[in-house]
Length: 135
Image 1 (tube, rainbow, N blue to C red):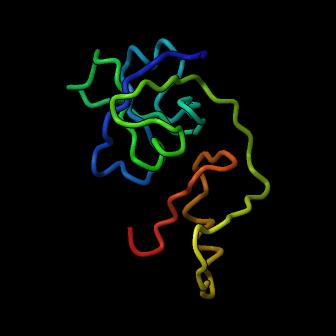
Image 2 (cartoon, rainbow, N blue to C red; image 1 turned 180 degrees about the horizontal axis):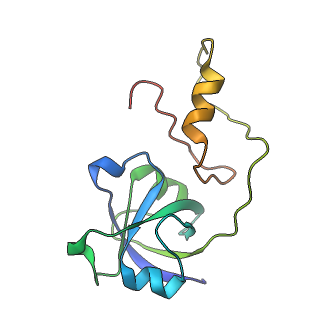
C-alpha cells in the first residue's frame, strides 16, 4: 500500500457526517497535504475525505479521526490501520444516487441534495450522508 498508515479513531461529535478526517501535523507533513485538502483513504476499500487539523491532544499519536460513514466507505473499523495519500480530484459533472431503500421525493429534493453534496469529495460506490431527517 502507498501512503502513510494511521490508526483509526472515533470522530468528534461535531465532525460526524461532514466528510472530514482529523490528522496531526506530522501526518500532514509526511503526505504533503494541508487543512482543506482532499485525501484518499485506503483500507479494505477506498474513500475520499477533507483534511482538518487534529486536536492538540492527538498530536504525535499517528491516528486519524473519522466518522462511521467514512470508516464504512474505507472498509475499516476503530483501531484498524488506514493508509492516506493526497488525492487526485476532478469536478463531477454528474452523480447518480441510488437510495438504499424506496423513498418518496418532494419538490426541491434535488436542490437540497445538491446543496448538501457541493464541495464534498465522493467516490463511486461510497455511501453519502444526505441528512434528510434533520442534521
